Image 1 (cartoon, rainbow, N blue to C red):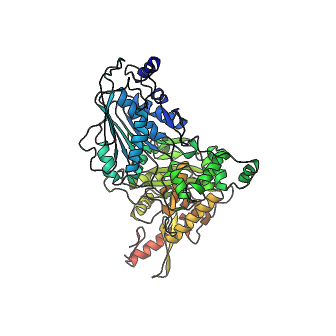
Image 2 (tube, one colour):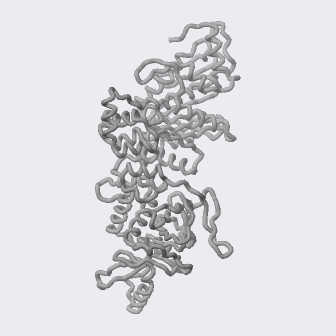
Image 3 (cartoon, rainbow, N blue to C red):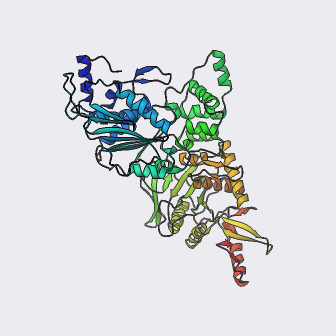
Length: 605
């Protein structure tokens, strides 16, 4: 029902719609009434989340390129779909030639977006100042410029050749043969055949000034096109900006206590995880009360579902299944105390010494520089999927390494990069030498790890970890460089890291903690990264936790000599480089007996 037509009222609307006025989305939206979650109409006042979205849109519109490319990962019911629908209607009404398309994930959502968003707002614009519409039964609002008989002068060019169309993903009538200016993909993670739908939609819009692509959704696991686009945007590998809103950013997600007794009972029943959430994100007890209410009443006591629908972090949003290996409350506490990087760059050998050079995208992150007399351990997880021709291609795995102070378990440095074998070995050599000739532990389960250790041997790195292997056929113990992570050692290493996390005996970076949250089991047997996630930094930290409990420390007060002669003492599962002489004797014995079944570098073949 249209409002009463009065001259001042129409003048105000005309100013809102005037193409000559500076576009102001907030002012446009304030002119409407929307229904709240309780069904009560109220003015469309932009909330804090919507304000941040508008700020990002305006930033991109005012940038040099002049077009919007935006991804949004959100909890449920925060009002962003209403905002985006209102923005498309504003573009359609205020400008000519605007072809605006919304793609919904199913037919019910299509009807809801069109009727409750587009039509509901359109009907509130006075007929005297809005363009004449031509509606069809295809969920679209087509506008054309026709002067009304009311005598009120319509603004020139208003709404000429513009339309808003809402369609369902997967329908035959798609966007393959169309060119549009404004696109909203709603709940894109839930599309059937998402690759085909999203791909066809994106190819219908050109990257020119004034266009916009907004893709918003709740998460649906670490898989699919939406997930891959979010990870690429997060890594800075695409032109899209990524916005993530945790559940506690929404002002309505809070629940008061009914009485002082309920308040006191709630405080007494706080879990470690809830207390850690409160400390990490600065939450109120009322917010935690709603969070607990959501688990019991909205997610049927399914914590994984609550993480998906109401995530606290981006990593949590994409975990759709599996049980996390590590204590989540402890991870939150460690995240709150995570170290800030001092420098980021790369190590280079220059004028006879190793030097660190600052570089924003460098593979090495320094948290604390080495101190004389301290004992350090550098642990490296080697990538199995390094491309033979291009190790930097997107499908290659990451290689990861970490450097720790043995006694304090303080994180000193991290390496995370797609890098070829020789360059990785050279980087580890420089990093180990810089940190007082750190004990260097390289995972050597596969040929890439073995190649790294061979390169480090060729460079004569002074403190390489050596592993003992028992040959069941020859009934003799053999030694080889690097740590061989069989299933038994892997479980011990993961358990050691888990213990360090639970008791908060280790310092972890934000990046390491994110991978820990996605380290899960689907079948209760093997622990590994969730689908679409990575565990290279988890395994590097696990290797340190394993070596740190298996290898004895240097004596208190001992310093590492300039020639690296102070080394660890051998143990049952691992030995250090003082066993090198025995290793060389083993190699000579193998060659003498022409034992080709076992290669000292490649292991059993």
